[in-house]
Image (cartoon, rainbow, N blue to C red):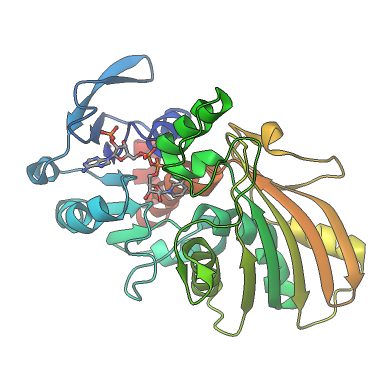
Length: 331
Ligand SMILES: NC(=O)c1ccc[n+]([C@@H]2O[C@H](COP(=O)([O-])OP(=O)(O)OC[C@H]3O[C@@H](n4cnc5c(N)ncnc54)[C@H](OP(=O)(O)O)[C@@H]3O)[C@@H](O)[C@H]2O)c1
């Protein structure tokens, strides 16, 4: 199996390397790409130091089975179609293709079936959307969600390595907001991305991507997205309403727990508890009335919200599109 990662030196890209390392995939060749800034760096993969190469149009002609992009929308728009021409599947983490009707937007546990027989570009959803839907998709299957009110508490790593570095500088007493619109250390900022019609870019993503992934245009999502001074791990306070009455709190808990890669717990779960983890945690479940419930959802945004979802797309695509024998040879 030949795999390439574009944006390998980024906050998500480094996690892609780490998540891939821990799969059982036989990776015959892994090629790492970034901008000129990082070309020549080396990253470790399964005990081997791999060089980071400068991204160029002609690198994809080498032929990769899977190309994972995590280098932002501009890079994806230019290079992903070229990569897709030469590769089996291109998985892009940016928002460039997410709302393109011809491109699947995939959380494998929820709509991984879209990968059967598919070749081309697949979009990885926004980090806050992924963990929210992993917590809620079984409820949607069983009781049909009608409204979701969600407030997010998003870590600085959601803004990439520059976001982490600005946060660390501010912890050290240097307050020069560049990545974030206000001071983030010792503070919270109720704006992520620019405003359009009073709604922020991050909020639009949660509204539109939720509808696309759940294939439900009637579902109303009311998000408030907030940046908080946490290094890794997004949290969400969710209040949701269903069309059909929920049988009991026990059934609510059992239904959420039945989600793949979802853990329901009575413990209080916080971002520091989940950093480096590949599961979505749900606690503080409350049934307010037969149609209304609340939950607190936490996950590692760099992994569950990005790298792990991308690698799960790769694995799902592989398992759906190879015969059993071929999968065994590849794993
Ligand atoms: N952070 C999250 O929680 C998260 C979650 C979901 C999705 N995403 C999305 O994933 C993507 C990456 O996010 P990130 O947080 O990892 O960002 P990041 O830390 O800023 O990393 C960006 C990566 O892209 C590379 N890059 C930038 N410009 C490039 C160019 N012209 N050619 C080649 N490589 C280039 C950078 O290489 P250099 O080292 O050379 O600068 C770096 O490896 C973004 O689209 C983001 O929206 C992020």
